Amino acid sequence: LTGHESFKKEFLDTHNAYRAQHGAPPLTFNTELNDAAQNWANQMLAKKKLGHSDTNDGENVYYAWSSETKTLTGKEAVDSWYSEIKDYDFKKSGHQPKTGHFTQVVWKSSTELGVGIATDGNTVFVVGQYRPAGNITNAGYYQKNVLPKGTGNTHTHFPVLLKMLFLYRIIITD
Image (tube, one colour):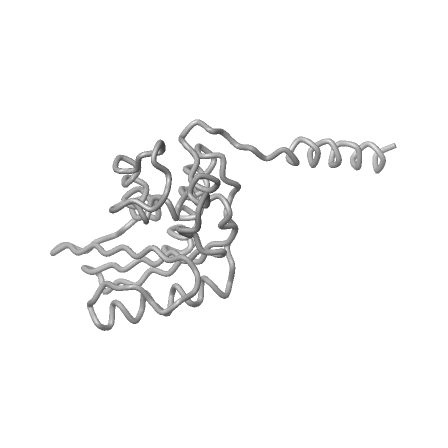
């Protein structure tokens, strides 16, 4: 794996580890989102300015700077977003200040992810794009999509899938 490829794998794996703790299904990479996220990360680096792109998809952005050469892991960016859980009150449910990165990371109905990373050695910009977008403020959406930690994986079809694969294997080998 190249540097950026291992970053992207770790970025996806870290998302999915956190999502599993909140009963959200794993995300998969989407090429279109990867391209859009990479394009936006490149633009932010060129301007040296953090901001959101004009997208209908969900989006988290991250910035780091160091006077030394900075090598960022995929886990660091996701950890910084997830750390906002400390400010999220699950009893209140709904949009809350300073928690939007966290809620997008674990948003249950988001299924696809794109990532972009751009660096000049000292400055790093990371973009995560999500489809469908999270942080929908309609009544009840946060309650359905931002589940408390320990909710566990609620994939009811997963054991069925395993059973189907097992049966399929028996049929083929007999």
